[in-house]
Length: 64
Image (tube, rainbow, N blue to C red; front, side, top):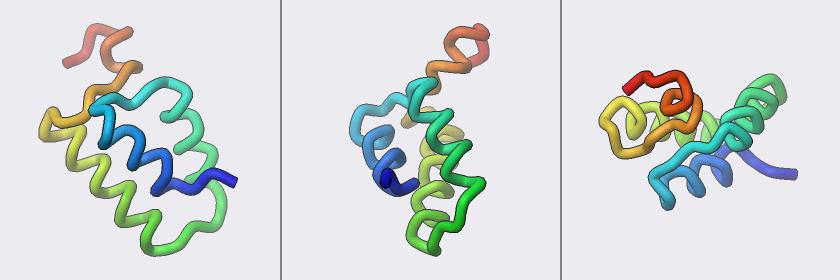
């Protein structure tokens, strides 16, 4: 089973969060997860806010 930290690592490595990855995160966040996954998710949020990770969903909507 995929873990939140795995999805986050992929996004941080590529600098891009795909729609598929975003949907996986939504699904995974509705299940039980540990502190490492929570920390990874917070790191992804920070990277997105800092512009280090771009989001496909925002690009499709024209949001920067």
